[in-house]
Image 1 (cartoon, rainbow, N blue to C red):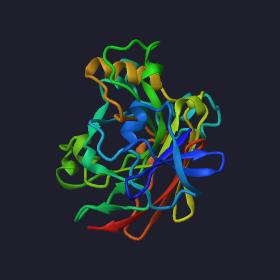
Image 2: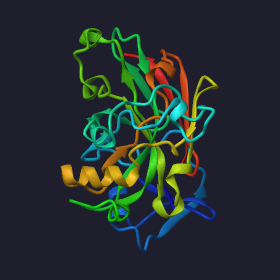
Image 3: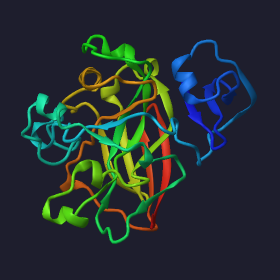
Length: 279
């Protein structure tokens, strides 16, 4: 099933007739923790372009870095799926490179990414986002699927060559942690509706120009590898997010500027539109 959060805070669910209001749960966290026995009310509707983030303030937003085989190393021999150079880090080293984005960076569909004053290199990265479904600790890879409620889209926005980073001194959690730097949505599709997350196709358009297009088949540490590892780092809570990394390395990404419009889409999840504006 698909769920989304309206700007009013009401949760809606995708039914055969269209999206309808879930009338016996107060929030998306309530749905995630107790998804059985939902009841609906109101006329069927289409999802509006402007929505609240599916989960407004998760306790944690984890994000993977360098998590794709790229170039000649990808399964697709023409190298079009994931562009750039593959990391030299091992799978274990990549797990230890996962970083945190602050929940204050989250915005929803229809909102604007705000470019920090003086920043000239702001880049969006489309990523599959895992939504945790239950309190979990010390899971094996085999146990990890039981902790996943579903999937969404997260744009991992980064400000490169900004401030002290020009001398290589800023951390990922800073350059990727500015307010509005984690657009999240449009909703959540439950795990049962995406049985093979690796085959999900991702597209990112900026001003109608296709900037990224790839599947998740060349991911190095998969969904359940990351869920298992992070559950050993700390307790995962319902609504926590794990963003899986982006297929393209930085040299194959293009900056966005004030006035641009982005559309992010992942097969089986949906699409969301966002603006870019200056601070």
